[in-house]
Length: 188
Image (cartoon, rainbow, N blue to C red):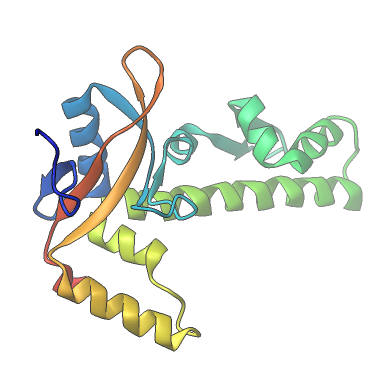
């Protein structure tokens, strides 16, 4: 008594097309928790959202006219681009010339890479959840059979099943029930 039939699941419902940002905010408000990762149900190797990606939107690598590089916040940025630390240190020591230009180019490459990370995440984060899902879960063009199967399954459903790892208000790791994101999957 009180048990659910085996074909029923606990679901967190989210209906109507919304941005990934709106879904994350909705889940955080509704469950008084911080979403750390959002991924297709049963496949945590794929990731629609990781809170560390959002943090990178606040990172910066600025290169001044004279080659002075300002990195904010230093720790996480240097962890992501370890070669940048040495380039910045060497820029303070090396005189004008080819060696200095090499270090400036390393800093520019890191800045360009960071901007690409920000742009890619922003597009996914501010775009529709269904597009983010398809972007990470759909098999590549080279795997025709798996791609056709994925497309057929997606078209046959009126929802996308997602999972989230969260940290609750007490700072403890937690998982929400499966998220049934209702949308028109035929337009994905």
